[in-house]
Length: 571
Image (cartoon, rainbow, N blue to C red):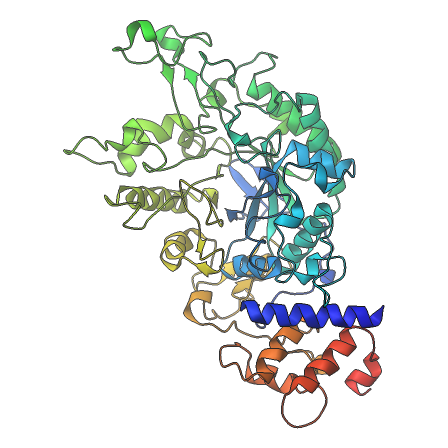
């Protein structure tokens, strides 16, 4: 058995090398064991989100989808290493990860159902050579054999890695069924999964993670929408109708908080809201076909973006310490809304016109009037000249970014994925390269101190290699700023554990298969390995001057359990 494990580890390492997979060198993530898992819960006071000590925090994150589509894993793991990509997200300063899910996959995990019941098989979306940690065997053996772990086990590995990296998690019920276009269905239920199924999934998930403050929030439903004249639509009023989103959101919030009273609850808006002053009601069509040349009596918005109902019918007061309202907002490349004036060559939009024409009455009044906190759950888009030739989408991104900074509005950027068709993402080259220009646009809206050090939502663990913990921020014990990820190919290293130098090639205090991969590169005299001088010294594991394949064999035998820790470290 040990021989097979050694073969698998060696095979995985060599295959990773052949694919050019890189791993973060010397990440400063602290050990999650130091965190008591209960000190990072957040709650609402007035229009602020605060920690257990009443200190205000700023949630500034990013979306990463895949679980909602039926692939049962983050997109991009078909190409690159999951742990490495999470580390990059942390190192770039995002302190929150919004993860689209579905009612279907949560109930699949609850009921321990096979991954094979999903529309797509997980084995087709996990590259075992890039992700040996996600295989049952710990890699691929010499005959190319491997078994991908159960999707829920992979998810829990990702949760653990986020904990170690100082990233908090918010899941979002993106759709009822797992489906790449499931988000296009307007309600929190469909013909396969009922509202009761939705409540069951929410309740189970909240209960399962009630002792782990890595997961701090749940977005109850992505983008409820629909127009009154359509077969199904989400409304917001004081009724108990099946399609009343306000009533459903209250039920969803109570189901979650019954299991874990520490969670934040994100509640999005809907799409349409009647102009009651003009005589409209919930039966009035958004498009009046009989009077198509007259102004509509329905206030329209982006899907999930209309929070006008909060003024007339706010959520139950008993939920106030948990509720964060969460609109979505996009620029003209997603859809040419009238407030962008794209067809009017005599004018353009700016912050004030956006507030006057759309933002204020639709969602910004909640922040401006200090009613409750806001988290813009999705904002993003293309900024390159090919996709945005007029530059107006880039213009819009600057306007909403600066408004959120000025008003300290929480947000999660859409998205990390490069495969978002109408927005693009923060990475490209099959998830292998960061879009530096787009990241530089987003970066000023990430929570950081005056020296550019990113601030974690975790009291003990800094976010990534250029971050600090929440306790350090509020105690004034702040680290000096380090080189940002896009400025160098080497990540700043921490001082390695003096008893774990041997084999610790990435100088993070832990010896694992990633060190074997880096050691192989040192042995091959790869000048782009990114290994520090200390790491190269650590790579000499057999004590013979110079690093060679013998060192790799020695390390792999130790990882496979063929060499004892005492013999390996010479204790």
